[in-house]
Amino acid sequence: MKIEDTLTDEAILVEIGDRLVRRRLEFNLTQAALAKEAGVGKRTLERVEAGATAQLTTIIRLFRVLDLLPKLDQILPESKPTPIEVMTRKGKERKRASSRGRGSDKEESWTWGDDQ
Image (cartoon, rainbow, N blue to C red; front, side, top):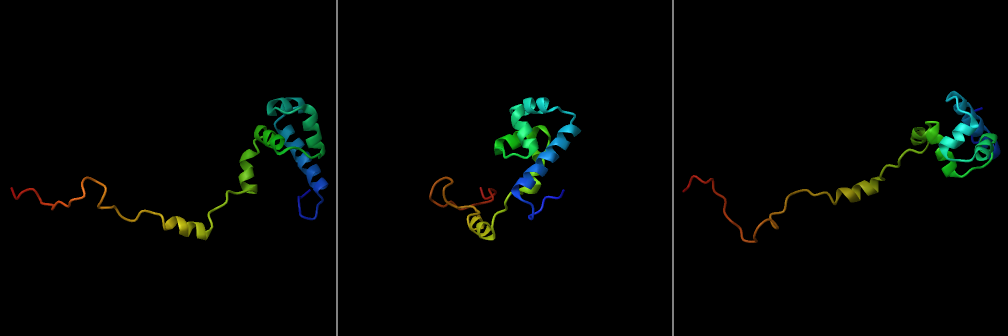
């Protein structure tokens, strides 16, 4: 089943649970083995696979074991700075070196050194 806006929350949870079951079986893991490796209770995993709500930390632990965590970047890509943020940062970039601050305040004339 394709997850779409028209599905109810409960239907989406059931579909996610079904997909987790299939992924677990691809890894040839029992519920007990996956639950132990993820650090969650077996009963918690059973509820997630049945489509019940779960804490986000539980989902993250299961995704980590089932090698699904990197795919979250596709779902929630890292936000890029807005054009205004880029402009405000750009104004703070250093454009040239300061003649002051390195050594003394008095100016010394520069020579090639062969005038001696």
